[in-house]
Length: 396
Image 1 (tube, one colour):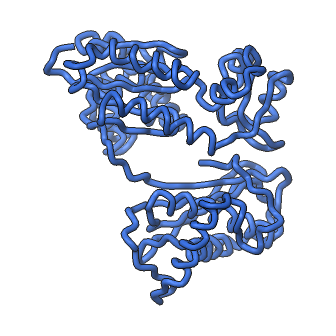
Image 2 (cartoon, rainbow, N blue to C red):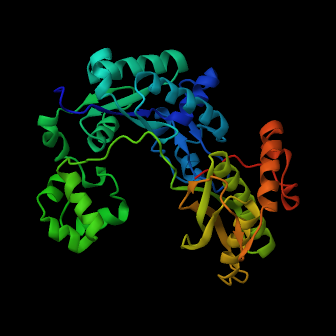
Image 3 (cartoon, rainbow, N blue to C red):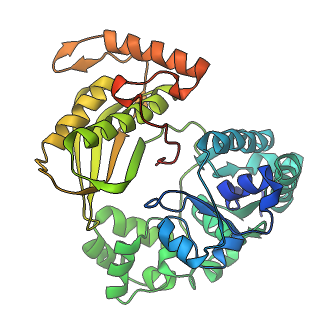
């Protein structure tokens, strides 16, 4: 690439959760490995051997077992994956300070300034891949381009354990033949709308007037889709990133209707989400709940607070009120979830509950967090949850 053009890498670990499990247990090598457990849980990750049988992330566990009954099913170990992720990100930061993690297993790197010292984008990508495999025993794939959008698509086209660089001058040759749903943000619903318009490829979108896309999809989505279809993405790699939300959900083994049991689950999910939020030095301004019924219909409710909060009890009281406000009397429920949204940095945010300032719950939470940090997450819990097992599977 020209010295005047940015070099952005998108590094994506290959079947990350499953790869960590294989590395830690060599007996799993060569076997179909699925991370995900429970009668009604979903697949968190599947290695490439399992994918040969059609198993994919987010697939219900019962379907995955039907496709590959011989596969090894493993409960997720988020603490372990987080630990390995931190080691991966440390390798990235040895290459460049401009690292933007997107999740535990992928990140954008701006290596424009590193080229003079470390070589071309291709050479830097090869260095990263070799070191990740040598130091951590897992593999990654790297997309190289002049912007984030193209780099991310490129990494998906060189899996597993590959590198793909897209030359800016040949970008449209690479981009336009691809399916429309390869564009960032094009999910099933948007893709269905596009197909109704006769738009199946990215080229189809690029050759549709911007105003037409805006009329059908709305100003923000239509305009963004048009720009991306021409490979235009002006976003920088952001090194300091405040998470937009932290959430946790639980699918029940048996549908529940008892209010006390459902509220108990909301409390557990609130505790888990609030623990993570405080650990990241954040506070929430909006609290949301999600309820899914046996027919998979899902509803959600949210409340925005007068002031951000970090308190588990305050958050639970809001979640509880939102749930009770649904007036669900003996309705069978399959899944519930709690989401802490509109997150802000917590600089000793003043707590506000029902119009009264209070610091007692905040102090209690801090004390509880210190105990958990020293003795483990299950060492101190709300009295209503003491008989429950700590569930490490229901991450967002």
